[in-house]
Image (tube, rainbow, N blue to C red):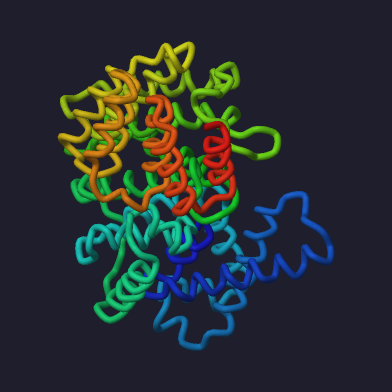
Length: 404
């Protein structure tokens, strides 16, 4: 994602496939070379260097480059030393960080539909696969692939210039960028397409991007720093639990069984710092409410001591501004823990559109088990097994069934 962002900045978004091709070639070169010589001491720097060299080779080889790609780099192309210097500047690590974030804002062009903007950012700049994007946006993989293709064709045919916005336009695009960072973090927190439950690299990337935004307040009307800091608080609260979520064999440890002494004190302090800072202003966003929910978990010394009624009321408020089956599902679980398994069953049965969601059936099975209804619990767990996709999740469900 970082390399594609830099190269797209160089070639222009209509030539995004060229940028992706160079990155793909770089990764193939790494695969072939590292297999023989081993992984280098600094693999990221190695990749940047190879991508830079491949870019220089392309620029020198392409006869129509001066006319069609980057007229402002004509002098650099004609002078190999100058070209090497210019491309090296692009591949400075700080420049890559900034370029990636700037390109995220650039991708949020009003000529592109809002949900397609998200797809473009997640696929091109964050490196997610269509499977992962489909899961994040509750869509089908083939639908995502088609829409990405149409978006790229639209950019080419209409010559859409995705320049980095300034001023009020920057503020208008902030929500889409924050949503992309939020979805990137979620994919890292709980992977949807691999056998690995957690992908810390993705969550850390989301935290890095969010931290850049949080550290650079802009004097632009409508640029919502409070929302940025609320998102940072939310991500820090969740990232603090990483060390306690899996056992030594990589199996899932449920929240109720996690060793809370493993929760990161540093990230928890960071979360509260951002959460306090997010109180500035009058708006309460979805990130504020989700951060509040995470703070109740962070505050509780044990699972049993969690303030489930407060969490329920937070989900109630969240549902009023962002109604969705997932929010309704989490609200029902909180109600069940606050008022007892029977109340949880009733609340879950009222939730719609989650009949193929393994987490929904698992939660229903849990409440049936606690309500002394083992037959119904077993049926719910069997449905959960049917729809679960990660081996680690299937093991959790299987263990629950075995304990009936």
